[in-house]
Image (cartoon, rainbow, N blue to C red; front, side, top):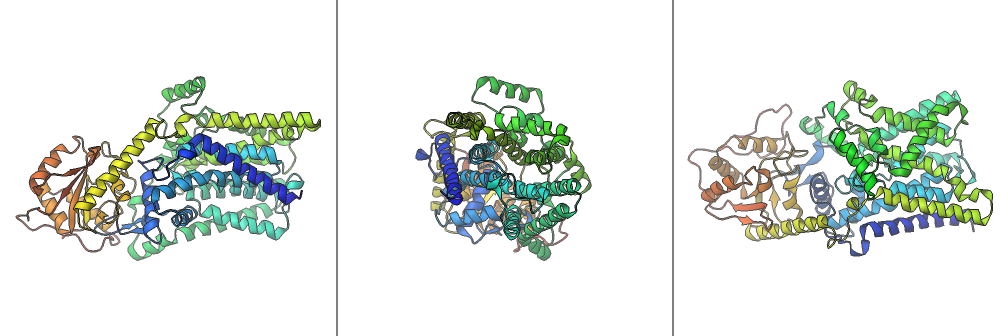
Length: 613
């Protein structure tokens, strides 16, 4: 059997095991692709962008949102072209946004398995430990917790390639790795691979691009100091420049938009405090995952939660027991630097790991960077997925003697393979508690809740579309900014997107960019008495009004009584009684002139006041 056939068999086996684990955890045979796993909070923005890709050439503009203008998301730049390209390609397979999002989320598991197996093999690990390490990395709690709420962060399959590039930079371009299986091939092939990695990491999110560049810089400096040559640092700088150029290419539509309409500072405001708030906590890396399936370990995590500051998204960085052991070994490795061989994998990973911790930990160098240079990289806890790959690669390297059977014959080899299988099974059970792996809808109450909310909204929007003329604009209350609104009572930041997700022929007011003209006009309406506000909305061309009862302290009761009096009609109410629609057909004209919305939805540079006339 040739080396290429054996390598291909290893990748097929890894993917088969990944799909088996995925099927057991998510019950794939009964998985309903037409209903999203998560239907609330930040996931709604991802869903809306996925639906935009089914209706528009690209995700940046959507005329069905932001009425009376259009949703222009250019002011909120995202270097995620790779993920949006996947979603666009999947839109040719399925026409429903829920199916597209579900498919991509499921696809991220085998993709992560493949890239991590490739990276671990190139770093010198033998096949079986690399398969175990890659599967544990693919099913990190980070992946399961981010889920569809932060789908573009859960799609971290480029991270292993970024780590591989950093190790190559440290070792030098001509280093072939540790072992016959890891020969790099010709220099041009290595350069081509590095170029592809730069392109991918520049298009897989600005956070992962930033952490990849940081790892490259650390590797370049360390490699140059160790080898007393400038070449590693020069290579790192070149790769960082290539990655930065790729990020600029990803956000070039935003740069072009700003050159035409002026920069809008509101959506990009990032307080320096956020680097402290969303920083990394070492305790959260090594403690058991929240709601662990084994009660004793769950109690340990609960004790930490009750005795520390309230957790936020940094609670997702848990490495699991195997990863925690690998992480600890890398920290200990720093103490024995003098005893290691130059270019040794664990020595390189220990340096990258320590640098990542010093950057991201609360009060670390990331805070200083945000204070002195730029505050836009704020959620430093997200480097946890890099630390996870360092840790699991280290753990897999310690399992290498098991795969070799300690060199003592077939019986010991069988024992070694059995131990590897045991580590995989226990590791997956340790990292994936039932609360993070949704069971069938008829078993899990949370899945039933999601399905009921989804169907209730779908039925409600169908009734609204039957009552309103095609293409009608619907004004949504209460006023909430877009994106990243603060919650309004029970209404989350993107709750106003839910009607659009089920709409086929209506336009919705939510989605106009905060700080731009249409948003300022909507903001100005809050100062008007309700009769004048309704007349202004109707004068702007809106034919209906949607009340999200979650956004009011009294569930909108007082507002709806006044709306029924002013419109002369009873509302259409959703099955879950959270949404109410009023027709504006019978709104009486006001006794005094009302302000009109300016035609253009785009603010002019320097605009600071509401645009009405």
